[in-house]
Image (cartoon, rainbow, N blue to C red; front, side, top):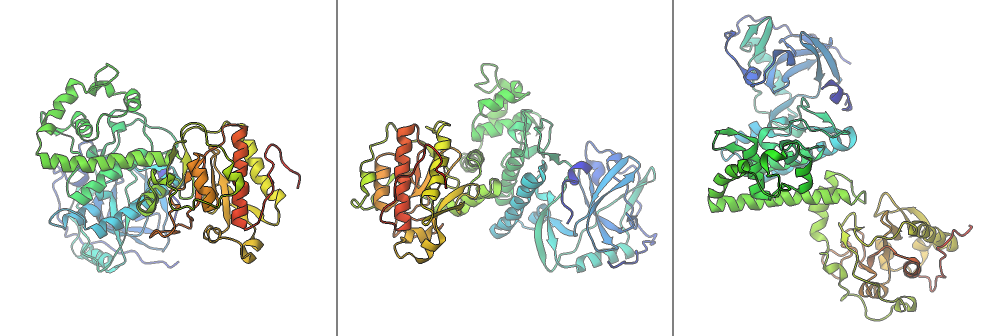
Length: 575
């Protein structure tokens, strides 16, 4: 635990400690279990024996207990200075890590229970999810930490109302918390904070089960009802289980009930087979690769290539098939949406870095803010809005591309998934873009792409962009960017609308899915003009020559030049 928290970045005046000397507190019998002692695997040595009034690290005075969990307790403390940090404190059972952060109010779960219908209002849910996604992005991308225990009672609301903490102090001084003493260890009852006047942002808490993310894991983690299939089957898992966990929790917060319960009718308790049966009933059988890697797959699936559920799993499936039709349909629909989200997120990550963050936040941005405005894949080959005449003779002479179109994936990033160019083309394409600048120094310059943050791109030179009246509106929409190539050797490039029509119709290209037709409601919304194309990667030297012709005419169009000479691609030209 301590090593995990050390990965988290750490985000005066001295105060006199309070004196908690009131002896009039309720004494609880030592044989009566309470709070954290009620956990089935409770071990006293896991918990530092905190005492109210105690000062930790000569700085943090314990005021009262706010709550507890399976591996830690939560306390309100007065900062006798005014800075925050984390530190270790030695206890009878070993070393314990204390994480210090501003005091929080109550958990999302407690807040949820204030609503009679047990559902979060949509605006509150949106607020919570935004902060959760930001927290996960930070943990996964910056700290390389997997939380493994995401649930509503581990997300706490902050508060800007300090009066609730002052009131807590006064109550503890006047009416000390009930407690019991066991082996010189005090166990306290938690005390609730009063309702604040103002709430702050939700905060993801409780890193007691967190693990480092730079290695694969197989241990059993997560709350029972949120366990990912990898965890149930004892297959290697990593960051993706946090995403599954978050998705299941989101369902609970929005619907007021669990997506999966894992309740086994035969044993009347949670069982892995019942949980897996619910997942299979709603989402279908797990992928074969997952079944092959799971140490426990044989417990739930037959040995005939694990192609069908075993008798154990079939027994657990039976009661699911007798549920009311409407409940099953609604749950199945929502589960299908969750399954689609998981698959789509994985496909997004597989595309590699692009113009948005290569993480969960980037996927969410594309899904919610970009995808609704994008062309469908079928519409990407539509040319009805492009002029039928006016193409340059070089493009008119380009032959039809051999074979079927290449398969493309994604929106941002936008990538070629099939018919990839051979590796020898990489040097040729690199030469082509470098020589374009060398051979046309007054027209062009090279700098980092505005569309693809990880790639360099070809731009209209600043003087031409600023002063030439021949520069088209598309060039100003694109802020001067003409094109760039990707790691898969496909190329994003602007052509004139007439040239773009022929490039698409002859099978060499298709529109970028944000290249919306002129006159459409959201035209230019993402600084992408209508004739921005994906040119498929060249498969041989003949296709390389055609790519060079497209680039030459893209430069001619975007710079407003009457003509641009041939660009060498088989070797670098000296400057």
